[in-house]
Length: 162
Image (cartoon, rainbow, N blue to C red; front, top):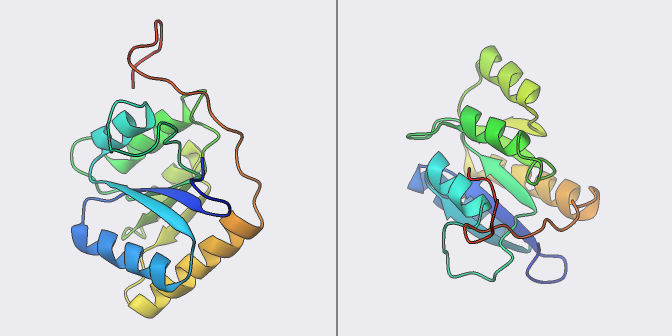
């Protein structure tokens, strides 16, 4: 999972490049030891999690934490979350929904689908720093990480697709 001791591998599923840059900056300025992988749509996210998307990283690309936007092109965040939580291999991965939606229906639907946390994206950068500080404290210092997931690639016989 992690690429270095204490480093958090985060998969950010975010179609807004501006939001991705803000999150990346907040992680850096918030002193969160991390390796960030950014994918811009639901299909890419599922391909990445199933080992079908080559990002040039190490063979074990299983993230420690997934930050998921709901408003994605193609396969939206609700569908991505459902597919992650319905996959016996991936369901142990913690998913934090980080989105602009504050609609009650979205909050209820994502928690019912198995999201670990639902966070409305802050409007100001200072609030992003508070957000990543909280993520750091919880996911690096408090929560137990999921056990290593077995690798699964397209070449494995019988491996189900996304």
